[in-house]
Length: 251
Image (cartoon, rainbow, N blue to C red; front, side, top):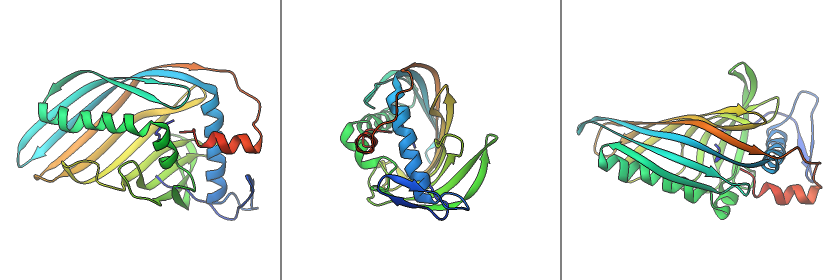
């Protein structure tokens, strides 16, 4: 689900098999990540599909003057975690639309493929986690964790994540790509926000600021709207073996 996707940690828990053991003063980073994976797998099983609409906008200010581009995208998400993104319209700079925004859509489509989801999902196999503290996000307490990728590629990132303490969902991600995602970009940072829709947390707004190789700065904003969710009823808990298998398709 998401690609969905900052940093994790808290003190004093060890993992025994697939069961988290909680320390007296609260969960450790490992325990938070473990429970995050379990809850994500549960939500994945309950989510049949959804559709949504997005607006991708880039505003560039720099030595090349001021330019902007915008595309509208229709998204279809399936129960197996695959996404289909269709560009339905575009306005503004043809260069920005074709070389930046459409490339971003292609990268997200690529990231949703099963093999890439397994390699980049938020898990101990792919990331190292460190607990930084706690903070209230939109009125809800959350743990803050630092995430560092074990392999740098265009689909992983480093930074911080906020994990909702009530249902162990990622509600915010701040960071930077582990590997430069575009020929056009020199440095980039991003801030992703998620909102709750029924039982599910889905992308709500994304803002990224990039320093462009030709000089200047570009701001990318993605607005997510018009979600139509098809959900299945809650399912009974899975066995430990089934949970391990399920996590590889979650997110």
